[in-house]
Amino acid sequence: MIAAFFDLDGTLYTGHIWKAITRHHWIHRKKLPFLLAFLTTHLGPWPLVKAGLLDRESYFRRWGENMAGMVGGFSRLEAQRLFLWIWDHDVAHSLYSEAMSTLRWHQEQGHLVILVSGTFQELLELIAQRLGIPHAVGTPLEVRGERYTGRIVPPFCFGPYKVQRTKEFLEAAGWEVDFASSFAYADTAYDVPLLESVGNPVAVRPDEGLLAHARQRGWTVMGTPKGH
Image 1 (cartoon, rainbow, N blue to C red):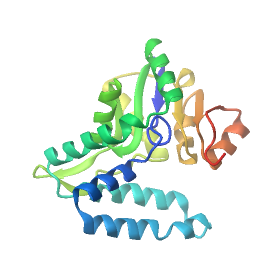
Image 2: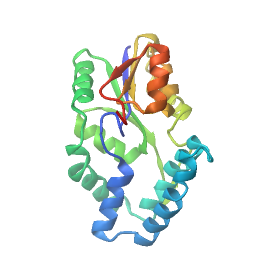
Image 3: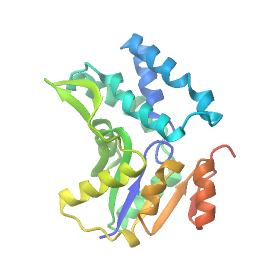
């Protein structure tokens, strides 16, 4: 079986989920104390990260893990309303056409198409459903007593854990994928493990780190690199 793995943020979707959640919470006056604390504590260190004084990968991993707090205390129904709002007001209007056309081509070829992202599993499944993608591998949110706790079920689907979670998903489904003949599409240097896991990696509008890696390895580059 040939598969095609697609990242979400920066690949199929030109925006950022954290920005969409922030906009929703600000407009609807949801969890504002948490939101302000999150933005202060996570955006504050960015100059140090950019200067190379803090580790980038650890920074982004903590960011993704702590984002779960944005739905902390929400019921499943409240979270579903949030996720629908994000689709309707942001993601649906911010899709990267070339990547979407490529995804449709894979579907026409009968390939197994899977959305793989650090995004909350529940939100990713909704987005996948709206895009006509039957499978999604993301970061599950912890639930207790029908409410989200504000924590993830580790590990965060990021870096090498994207590959781990994807392979666990395939194993649970009982599918044998020919990775050497399969495809992966992603946009950042942190997606290198996923891209290296297949025989046909594609850097989509890559960041500087991924662009350098793609050029060195002779990988296909789709679209204009970020910052160019």
